[in-house]
Image (cartoon, rainbow, N blue to C red; front, top):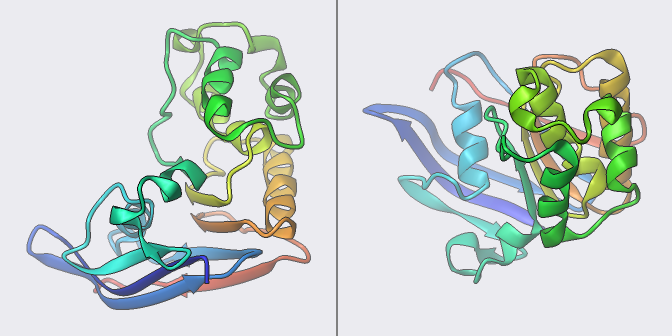
Length: 205
């Protein structure tokens, strides 16, 4: 097991969202977390990424609690949440250069990654001048331009056109083929041929 959670208890306020959840994601697997709004999908992903703490339970990366692994998991992780998570004063190209300093370039260079996400003509424009959807594409271009063993992606298809979705799905399949692990949510169908795609359904708790 690479990414594992044991006996997670997660609440929002006084409401319990997840109680006693166990899960494990093996190399090459994609875990698709589904459930109605309010069931705790985003909260679970944030907990798995180490951005939120559960009331009870533990998240482990390669057998070690991520709260005491010396930052090994954080260095191996790409997190894509609802917020763009980029520096608005920098261009898309400059943002990706900052990100790639942590993980290094992957199978595709920065300019090629931006072009695949439909940002080739905007690669040197400060991100403050880009639309919300374009800013999100900058963040998703990280998946093409960086190497990281673990991806945790909250609604990565949001605001993407068909071309960008196809580029992202191709990279998801490539990541899995290379032994990477992915945990994600999506309101859209996820089409990943030849990939070990597993489902985790949450309810209202």
